[in-house]
Image: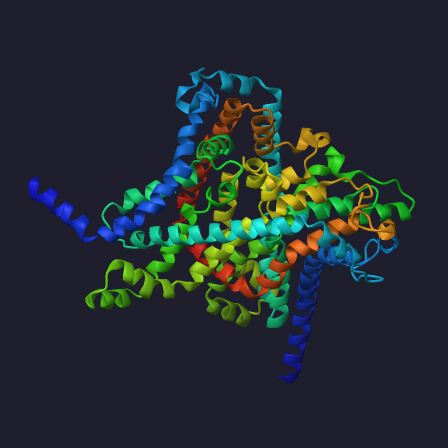
Length: 305
Length: 296
C-alpha cells in the first residue's frame, strides 16, 4: 500500500501546478453553484434569514403540498409548457429555413450584410426589444394603432389582451433569435461533402431538389439534437423577455414559472414556498435533459454531453 | 452548348429571385424597428404622429438628445455597466482559462471526477431564491459585486476553452517543457497566445451578457446610483406614455417632445456602442458558437 500512496503523492507533487490552477475555479463553482444547491433545503423548511438555512424549522413537504393544491401553480406550469411548445412549433424551423436560404446565396457581400443584419437583434437586450414592441403596439401613439386609427378602426390594446400575448412572445422571439440560430446550421451545412452536390447536378437535380434531398438530410442530426435540447428546456422560458412584457391583465396566459417565483418569492418574501416551486422546475428540467440525451444517444452516436 | 448554359442561368435566376426576396424580407423585418426608432428619436413629435412608420427622420432635431444629456441618469447607468462588464469579463477569463488548462490534459489523474463536478452544474441549479439568499449572506446585496460575481464563470465556458486548448499543437508545449519551462509559463507564453479567438469569444460573450441583462440588478440593487444601464433604461421605457414632466430641464419647446422621443433616443444611446462594434467582432462569436456546437 505504501509505495502506491507514495507514487500518488509524487504524481500530485509533480503536477502540483496543474492541480493548483484548478483550485480558484473549483472554489468559485463550489460557492456560486453548489451552495445554492444546498440552499434548496429551505424548500422543506420555514426559512427565515435570522435563523439561516440550517437553523430554520423543518416543515416536511408542506410547501409542496401547498404548491400542488394551488390553482395558480398549475396554471403557471401550463403556461410554461404551452409557451415552450408554441415556440417549438413556430420558431424552431426559422433558423433552418434561413440557413438553407443563406447557403444558396452566391454573392458573398450580400450574404455577409444579410448575416450581419440578422445577427443584430441577438446583441440587443430584451429591455430594448420589449420597449420597442410596447412602443409599436402602444394604443395612443404606437405606429400600428396610429395606422389602424387612420384607417378608421378602433385602437387595440395588444399587450393587455390575453389572446395576443403568446403570439407577441413567439413572434418577438423569432425576430430576436432566428438569425443567430442559423450559425450552427450553417456550420453543419459547411461540413457536407461537396461531391454529393456534383453528383446530383450531373443527375439533373435543381437547387430545390439539392436542398431537399442532400442538404436537409445531411443536417438532420444537428436538427435532431437541437430539437431535443429545446425539449429538455420545456419548463424554462427565460425570465427577461416575458417579465418585460408581462402585466397583470395577461397573467392567465403569460405568467410562467420564472415570473411567478420572482413575484411571489421576492415580492411577497415567500422564500421557502417558491424554492419548492423552483426545485420542482429544476428536477423536472434535469429529468427532461437526461431523457433527451438518452434519446439522442439512441438515435445517433452523438450525445449532448 | 451556348443555349444550354443560358437556359441554365435563367432557371437558376428564378431560385435566386425567391431566395433574395425572402432574405431581404426577413432582414427588413429585423432592421425596420431600429430604423424607425432612430428616425423617431431625431424627429419632433408632430412629425412622428403624422408619419409613424417613417424610417428616415423628418425635420431633424437633436433637442431630445440635448435633453437626455442634461438629465444624466443614463450616464450613471453607463458607468456602472462598464464597471460590471469589465470586472466580470476579467474574472471570468482568468478563472475559465486556469480551470480549462489542467482539464485539457486527457491523462490528468482525477480528470473524470473534475468533469463530473463541473457538468453537474449544467444539469441542476439551486434556482432563484437560494441564489438570492447566497448573495445576501455573502454581503453582496446592494453592491455591484452582486452583478459581477454570480454567474461570471460557468462549466460551458470551461468546456469550450478546454476544447480550444486541446486543439493547440502538443509539440509546441512539449518542446517548451524540454526547455525547462514550467506549467504556468507554458500556459501564459505558449498556450494563451494560441487561444486568442477563444479568449475573445468568452470576453465578448461576457461583456454582451453584462451589457444586456437587468435581472440581477433588479433583484440585488436598491440604490439607484448603482443601477446599470439596462435597469435605468427599463424604468424609462416602462414609464407611461403620458407627456413627460420636464419643466425643470427644458423650456417652452417641450410641447414638441413626448416620452416617445425620450424613449427612442435613450434606446439609440444605449445600443450605439454595441451596434458600432459587433459587425467587426462577429467572427469571434461565430467561431465560438461553432466550437461549442462541435462539443455539443
